Image 1 (tube, rainbow, N blue to C red):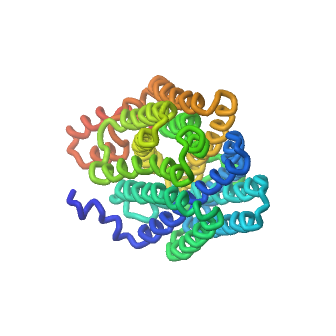
Image 2 (cartoon, rainbow, N blue to C red; image 1 turned 120 degrees about the vertical axis):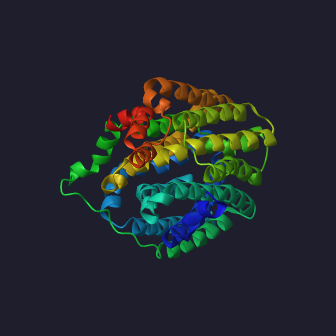
Image 3 (tube, one colour; image 1 turned 45 degrees about the vertical axis):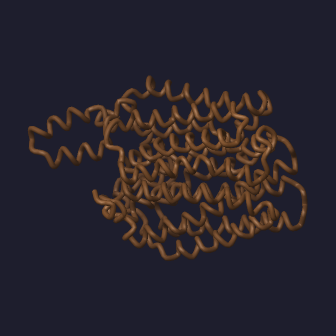
Length: 436
């Protein structure tokens, strides 16, 4: 493919508006994340309080996420995302008001984080499911890589901006974030999608809410892919502890903490850019597991480090490994799922991601209170390596997967009968996993 053809997906106007809205909203969310973490740690000086930042967002998320998946299959996904940006804009303004009032109570901050958790519950399945509706099928892999690259640019720049702006006060961060969320609302208003068409035999009512769960547990490859992320990041993620690591171990200010928080996205963004030019076609299962293992090694190094440059490098490696895993999982799950239940399956995927992120933050805070800050980070990285090794045994079909099943199926249709037999034999493990 030529360089131009690799970026043809940017000609899709709906995708371009969605991408710009997501970019600005992610910038704002990352800035808010830096400000909240630093503000809470300044107010309390307690690593467990940092854990409650994640728990406050996870509690409403886990309650609402499955119904939110059904909503994503019944309503226009672009409209859902737009309203979620409205709620996030409101949350940023509430944080601004709390800061300007100088209340000094973290309970009010946690209450706003609960509101953010509600918005995230509805936004995640809609955002994951809408991407394939915005581009032609031939450009979907490009869209995943370009979307991931842009997302990680925002995740790089957002924490850096947040950390620098925070030097002028938390109120400046929240005001800037509210403005960015407002721009995202306008951009999403220009994106139009239709509700997914439902088959005549589709489940309805309460049973429809659990359709995504039934589908995931009937596909071992899909279950193995999304559960791998759950347990790897649940144990290995250390985002919640970055304010404490920055302040107590590396002894840097909020700008240094912003640099640490941006480092994983630097690695992820570079990895995503490489995947735009060199998409994975072979040994995708091994690449996904290898990415998780690299994430675990990087977190062990980060826990042992007392140097800011080494810590930044370790976190960048963790982001690159995570990006490879996310890339494989996203393409696999979206192509394996019928569009009529894609929102609900994305909701299940979001449960796993949310549990690994927000619940993982709470786990990090509890472990740090119990073991100590540095041992908790090292333990998390070692646990992630153990998870990667265990998944090789628990999901051998996933580990042996050579190519994406939808590509193998497409190749088989294009080849003459004799060649089709070879393609089918080469992709037997994927077919077995898909039929589960």
